[in-house]
Image (cartoon, rainbow, N blue to C red; front, side, top):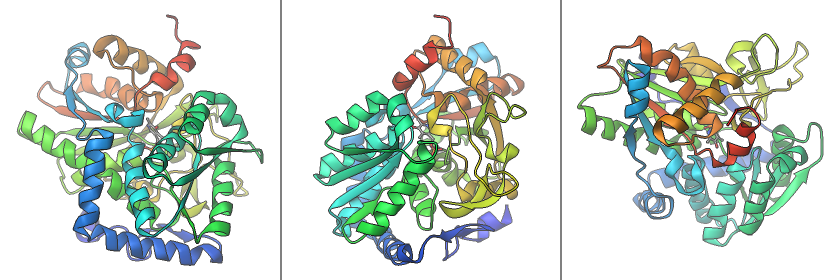
Length: 400
Ligand SMILES: *Cc1c(COP(=O)(O)O)cnc(C)c1O
């Protein structure tokens, strides 16, 4: 705890303890430095802050409500459960917060072209949305397999004027799409900004994305103080790259009474090896620009992952999470596909809210914990997105 209180994280070179940093080809060093300088300048500029807040409010719909889940609370019979409703944002998830911040930065830097990579297509849609809003050219790289699995999101991106490039290398999923986006950026860096979608990659991305997402936790803090007159006892969020979790957790890190749990994708179980729970089966390594925890074999080959929710299905986790775990400030666990699907259905039936399958992992953990806590305890779940995109997928598993 003491090191969180005393040290600004990350340090000047982007390290969170032994994690983070900048592991990129020489050609990307200068663009990353330029981005860092411009970001730090923007962060100090009241005009940039004012613009950021304006678009979050009038374009995205912030602040999002902190909603008391009364029937879920009664059903679980323990702690009071609140939902931070990021599912109500424009485009249906928290990802737009970061996209607004980065596109404003791109404009400041005079970039005319935006690129991004996407797995499930959610970050691609959020990026295409902000690019359309500002009239910037947008190219989104997406694994060819993902393009097929997420055909609706491909159409949404095209509708918004983006060019979607199917990537046919390797497994044809997110990892290959990121490689392709990095290749594009190296080639076109003078005109192009790369909007990375989570608290991952080379410095300054993990820092920058966290700071654009901290609005979630800043709002939740104000809102719970208003509603309960005190801080929450527990925060729970799902962890893919880790941006919605960092966004909620960050403003509470100094509050020692607030416990935090990050929930990874347990897939078909840890023993089966078909999961994306980096903190269960992973080890320290370098992937796509940063040093963190990842699923790799003994030769450093990145392992295949599996999750019912595409947004949690990535082999590595953001470096700040690895550090918070070492510090024992945040606890990390996982929910399996089955547990997430059950929580998906429970929240729909009890609260009239269909959560994203990603968010359902956090709900599943709360279904386990709330009954063990006293009725005067308070839990906040980050409901990172809405589940419309997942209904067809879930219907394959759930008896309706
Ligand atoms: C992408 C996504 C996630 C996972 O990304 P993080 O960076 O870990 O937040 C979680 N929930 C939803 C709804 C998403 O779209």
